[in-house]
Amino acid sequence: MAAPAEAPAPSADSTKRPRVYFGWYIVAGAFLGQMMQAGLSVYAGGVFLVPMTEDLGWTRTEFTLAQTVGQLVTGTIGFFIGAHVDRRGARGVMLIGGTLIAATLFSISYIEEWWQWMVLRGLFFMGGSAMVGSLVVNVTLSKWFVDLRGRAIGIGAIGFSIGGIIIAPPLTAFVDAYGWRAGWQVLGVAVILIIVPVALLFRRQPEDYGLHPDGRTAADLRDGAAVRIEADYRNSYTRREALRTPALYLITFAFGIAVIGIGGVLLNTIPFLTDQDYSRATAARIVVILGFAAGFSKAFWGWLTERHDARYVAALGFTLAGSSMALIVFAAASGSAALVALGFLLWGTGLGALFPTQEVIWAQYFGRRYLGEVRSVVLPVSLAMGAAGPVITALYFDVVGDYDGVFLAVGVNWVLAAALILAVRRPGPPPRIAVTSPATAQG
Image (cartoon, one colour):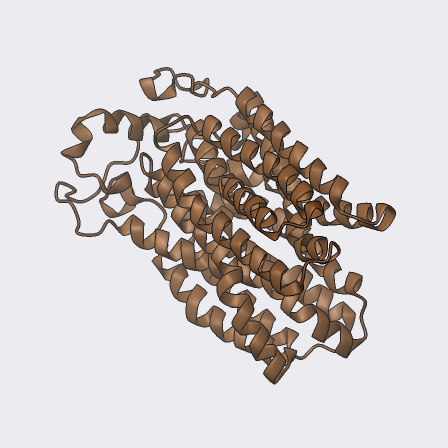
């Protein structure tokens, strides 16, 4: 599949600047979509775990196994939908995904057997979640923004962290009052009210609607911005071409190594603290601090990628996250809740760099035209590495009896990820592109 020599020209008069660039509406949709997707797939499980296992007589392992299976489903579906988002846009995929999620949530409220839970939660729910999640929304944002890509993706990604803060507390109160079956039903209604309208906002790329990336006008594109925007499209790598570059593998493993420990730490933050005689109330407050730090730092990290090499920004965030894990372990042992809170504040801030820098690097290095198919080919690897974290953490605790060693190992992983991302070299234009531009120079 060969790329055209130039990006598609806008089909309408784009000399007038719109009052609000439509790409920012898509950013708002990305925020809401990721808030719901994270709230349902990551945070809601903790709300339902105890009431469902007690009512249905399951073990906690049986409950959580659906999430592990779901990660494999997400990676598999992501592999196929990435190219579709490139060719036809995200709207149809998101509508199908939102409808599937809503139907599945209502169905879960009627289950009686464990196999029904595995099919509904592990297969259908996680399949729908893949269709409305970060791959779909961030590929779309990368097409609508070039120079402002970092802040757009960062703002949208805040929704992922805010999902737990906004959804989990009221959902807990509702389930405690009305039961877990009613809880799944109210979530089904929320999906219909939020994700389905959000899907209608999404469009494939600005050129399809007579617009330019970043909301620029034709007059704006008389400067160097035109060169950058054109090169970002023309020098795009197809999936097959990207697989021949060392950069794809280094980026995949750098971010994959960073992701390994996240799930284990997030899942075990409260047990880690209560095992060392901190109260559940103190532990819960620290989790809120972590959530706010991870959420609201994303826009800052995204903004930094617009001014500095995204590799350096990622390495800075990773190093901060890695060193913070050491502070957390030693502060917890000292009995200082204030120092523990500071450690999680810093870790959350470093963690916030992960998503915006990752998406910016993928788009900068491989271009926006085929970004969906490039991102989807490595998604299964990233998800598999991330899924290993909670299992490794639990096994370590079962053998050793504490979390100190595995938390320190997570910190080492972050530092290793920083070294790997600095080793990445930006590929030049694909071999089929005969003409280069300044935007394709070494990053």
